[in-house]
Length: 125
Image (cartoon, rainbow, N blue to C red; front, side, top):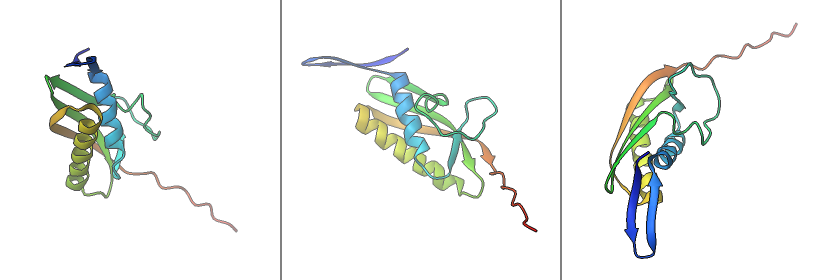
């Protein structure tokens, strides 16, 4: 596990890639239109928790620079470029504010579009 190590006057600060990954995942899930993260298995409708938020996020930290790769599923009917741009901006801003890293790029891989199942309406007689 790679870690960000900073030599500060009061001590050393270490932030693991896994922590940055979870922060990025939560930031991405805040955007409307992001349906769910692609965890590599058949996905079902569950809220994204803190533990699953980092599963489809890869982080590469080199010095003070971070490159973040995220795989997502989007809801049918959204304009994908708009959703992706919002995800990139929110992830970059959130990771930079919370960790002090400089995010050089946020790469988004849209793996699928999810069509929500329609609920059956029961007919009353």
